[in-house]
Image 1: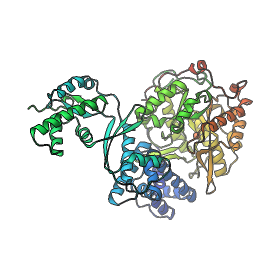
Image 2: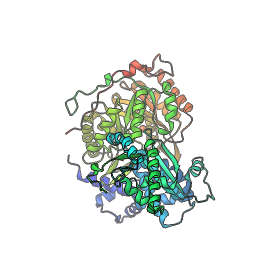
Image 3: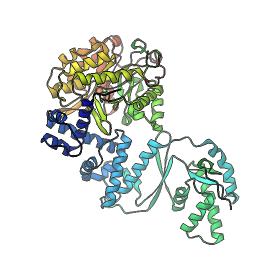
Image 4: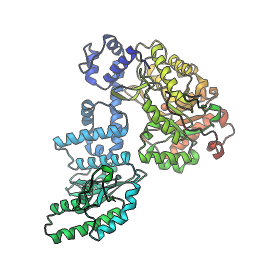
Length: 299
Length: 314
Ligand SMILES: [Fe+2]
């Protein structure tokens, strides 16, 4: 359907003014906004709005954006303390809103923080870990599709038996289940987040390298499990693109297991680990990556 | 008939829902364990679009326990341009699996191509802006076989050259489009205070026979402005408006409290619902003779469940 040209041009200028304080000030002062074009008729209409009330409304819009981030990333925003509002204003300026959904806004804020935290050292030092944890939790809650491929699930027991016999290494492809993620963090975030949820910001937290396996259930609840390095490394390598043999070779390099005996022992250990992870629904197995159109390499 | 030639559900077929609450995640457990004291729930449509799996499960579970109505915030009916058919398609899906008795959104705009304002923003009160809203509302209505309602918003300034009064603008859009109205009495009170008019005179100019649902809420003052924050008890002023207008709403089906922040213990909200029932008891025919703390029976709630909405109008 055809729109009224003058009204959509006015609404567009109005919307842009509401999210851009500098443009608002320029138009109020009778200048061009700089960041976009505006007709004199639209500028006159915008100047005739109660500027004080429009400014208040624009502030409310920023607070609305922040409220979405606070709801989705509660511990991160709590830990930011007095940095939160200046960072919100900077984010709002650098990244104007294009999506209203809480998920999109919170992830946009989180990504902005990751960039900002990466370029400066922020206190508290565990901030980045808490942020990564909360962004991962959000992503799991909002994007996970729970239906595992039925054929894959059915094949798992037979393939596990092969691995247990030390066979099928080159044609079994392990893959992390879609409802799980593994994070490597410099701090143990669980006790930190328990404090933050209570409104207390911990200080003096010693770094501690931890690996968190996160899994979301159908109710949207995300459970974290602390795992050891070999488990974290195996799950991370289980992309579905590499065979069990390739994963084994990579992990043998990581753990500097070089002799055939060492590699054989590592393989047996990984087969056992794989069985446990399949049992927990963390890993799925397939015997050929046909769904990706890739032929397995044969030894 | 809607756009697909399917018979639309009429208001007569929709049961009286009673006095309910807007569903909020923070109150989920408390709401479920007090279901017998909450007559229906209103879900925010946008939170269930794109089907985050846990939200879908949640809505299905809620639909088993409560009659549901869906309330959207980002349709942007007043944007001068084509209706966002993808968005309407998502509304339809949510309305279908939640078995929504009706769907609603706001008479405002929230976005233009490339910019999301993220809030309910006032339109100019002009014939031209009304024509846009009427055109878009008709298209949206045709996509549903359940009623579509538009809500009056809170606003803090008038958008020039508003040649119509707010009441004239709302009346014009509701009457000309043929949609129903979700009358937010807190917004009426806020606007009356912030923009200097008499809320009772304003209500007298509303299309009262089109009102199907009422919203109630409480906000607070900031820099001399009464903000629409849904963060406080429903104030007495707003309950007075309810007492004034309820007897004159022949098609009123549901009254509810919106609470989005500063959540009190559930008992306080349930007491507020009872207070609303008391205000309505002597004035609103469906509540005559009802104890203050009942909800419609299962049989009543099961009646009139609409069938799935249809695809968007072509
Ligand atoms: Fe409302």
